[in-house]
Image (cartoon, rainbow, N blue to C red; front, side):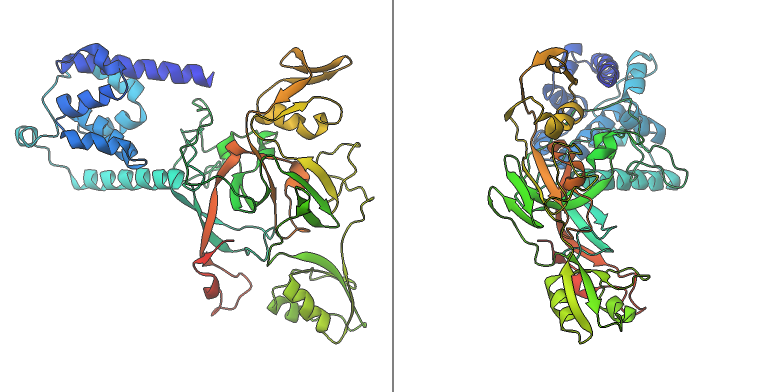
Length: 474
């Protein structure tokens, strides 16, 4: 349905352009040829210099140039009021056919030239100047946010202490390549929910398939990555990919890797994986009966329950572990690691064939684009969701075998790359061990650096963690 609506919109836009080209003394068919069409508008209808067209080749800049070109096009037909500009950008499929057929809409001349501006002077009101400035700011900020860089705040402790709750990050869209908006019609600056009033902040009538502009790099193992939470494909949310909640984790596994955990240690392709230098593990801490001082734990920013009783369950870095261990009243510290034979509910793939827990998991192979698997009782629990939900196939297990899109199939070849995302706070992180793989079309960008860090438990004078400002993320 979305593609049908998009096709109708394109047809209406080109009907309008065809008629406007004829009014400007050009051939109607010239409006149908991409790139050549923009050349005709720039050179022969609006009067831009030839070098100006080169700006259309510069990523991001070309978006501003493109919209500016079409605003100059309608200006050449006397359309210069605010609502006419707004409609040209937002509703071109309505106004372009209308003006193309309207007998009162005539071609006045090349709108970019000094002669045109002298012949048809137009003085903007103060209100119009403000409106233009606001619209430009919104459009510019939206494009920067969508294609260049976006601010993001750490809301939970799954990455502690590598990243802290209250860290504000800049996330680069350029490193892995900006993702073209898949649900392009949305309220500015709102992600998925309208501010104040609630409800959807986007319209699903127009959808664009997954496309990504070229980036500077591929996702490397152990990059800190922001991505859309894949489980929001399911009810009650059922959100489009780019409107799913943003999560941030470390890509401990990349396409083609074989990943496992043994006694809480990550192994990738048979070798010990990356150990976050500031990652946390939880421990049971025993004392001689005097207990732990809550204020001391708060001062060290050690996670704990204010109602905890012995043994205390504390989330500690290596440094914090050594310090707590040295306290005179601490008699024993025991890591809270599950035994390999302990089953744990809510662990991917949630199937009785795989008795895994958060500390003993796998091995599991992360799908890679072009990788072919055999469809059987062992692979189906692991890869069924990726094949059905993320790659859009109908998949069914029947008595006589597996059926893919209605036809019996023995194998499946993946269309996308996938990633295995985990938090550095391994025992306080909802991550891939709960919901499995993250498809490449869910990738938002790479976390670059902290631009502000706010400590909610700090005093008035140390709410801002000054030592973290402009800290790079590793």
